[in-house]
Structures are given as structure tokens and as C-alpha cells.
Length: 112
Image (cartoon, rainbow, N blue to C red; front, side, top):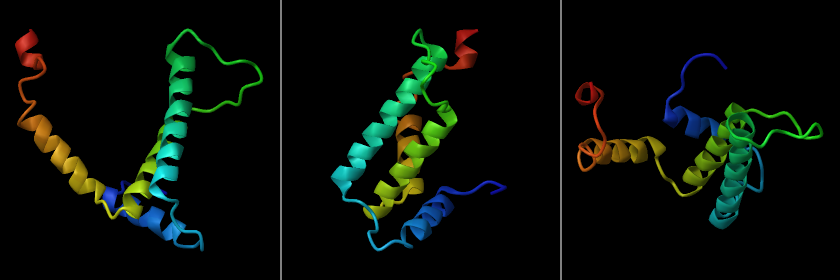
């Protein structure tokens, strides 16, 4: 689909997809396991691309982008199942970084 989507739109899109099925969302612990599994797959792709461990000829070709997409999907499923607004969660994290952690890192203009 073309264009940019808000986090709210992403959450709605996933909810509409999952809503088609009788099973609905998995339980939180199962989704946590799936998120962990996807993180492992992402780690494997990053190692193949940026690390010393290259793919075997028999291994399926996947991309870091695909693996991040899989992680995002599972994270959105988990948030939806727990009625968590990821946009609000993101806003709270950014507030924390812009207040409590504002002097934690060296700003570019200070480094020059």
C-alpha cells in the first residue's frame, strides 16, 4: 500500500486482519515467545549482513527489513491484545529521552 500510515492506522489494519479469524489474538506469553523468535531471526540477518557469519547456501534469503516487519507485526498484535496505544507509548518514551535523558549523549554541535 502506498503512502505513510500513522501508528494508529497500523494498529487498526492489524486488528482488522486478526479480526477475520475465530482464534483472534494469541495469549500474551505466546506473543512474547513469538516476538523473541522474530528478534532471533532479525539478529541472524544482521549477523549475516554486518557480521562475520555468512549465510550457508541452503539458508533462505531474507532481509533485515522483512524481519523488522515481522517484529513490528507481532509487537502490534501484542499491543492490540492488551489495548495499548503504541503512539502514546512512543510519545512517553520520547518525552523521557527529551527530559530525563536529554544530557546523556554528546550533541553534534558540541562534538565539533
